[in-house]
Image (tube, rainbow, N blue to C red; front, top):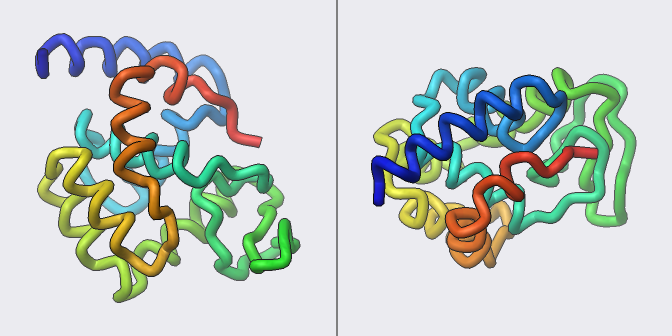
Length: 151
């Protein structure tokens, strides 16, 4: 099962490379910027996190509130719209590096099971309380979660 999941994930990642601004592209970009492994566990955890957020905000699939050059407010909670994917990734990376999220970064650094990482996300101050169920959903609907366009 794990091997077939990894093969499907590789194919989906390859296919998403030809389509800009998908959740898989974002997951890969964030992991690379954090210097963390782009393992199937980590990509799945990131996809579940994005699914759990369900963000309508531009270039911000994880709904960060980090101020960044050119950012505007997306909602009354202070979640931001970013002018580009590059600025959205940079702002998200700055946020994830905050001390509140050390357990998430640790789990990603060791490529922990995606559900373990999702539990750390749900327990963190980020506020994605349904990260575990969203990650389970993405495990069962990988292609849909991966190819979902980021606004």
